[in-house]
Image (cartoon, rainbow, N blue to C red; front, side, top):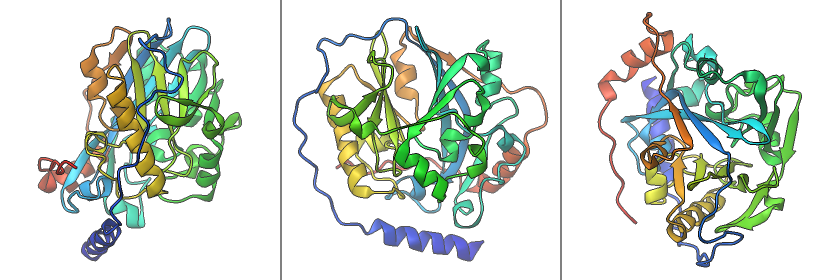
Length: 339
């Protein structure tokens, strides 16, 4: 285990020696974006925390510590649409993690990550508790098919599962973060190519699947081969769910690069497009993958938070193991230097 951790740290060091990239030029204009902002009436967004993962900080940020671990909450979203019904966005960790958080991880990846999910904290269970019937879900939108986003993708029997064609192909090949058993029984796929859409804001392409501007699927490849971000035109303010394009707040604030991406050039271009969009449209709320604080702080009336309260019962196996494994390494996260 110690030798494995050393190998992981050395690999991270080598990967961190990447060439310095220049800030790309992005025109100070917003494509297909009305000013002042006009949202889509009738949209209502539900927010759930569906567990967390604990990962070496250096696997989240290139400049992070390869010793210190960092807690990364997982969030799932349900968008109530006036004509499309319930739309699940990134349903999060699989309920099996409540029994054994190690079953997802092995080998190289398992050295730096643990997962934590209480019984009843998975998205389907929380939706039932909130009175949202799974049978009413017509769409499941996925940024990626990696386990932290797609673990409960199979839980909605009446839904079509939307993912980019490139992401679906990559997931079928396998690789770091993909757990085939979490999506191998899905029959109703809708494979899309957001790059065929129209420009929106500072992004080159976004797909308007419903044709009303309510939920745009942004071509955000880079973190994975076919990663998608979601732009929600809520009635009061627009919300951009960045997914793995911006794992944590430092990703947005400093354009701090993650450790592992499918294509660093693509990620670099798109993270700066995100930053430029936020600068040009102050109303835009950018939500990093593991930090929904900006959305909670906005206090939008059309956003409903569902705070999970675990039942009084013995801690899950994953929680017990994680507490033992990480107690000695839990220290405050370091803030990277500004660019």
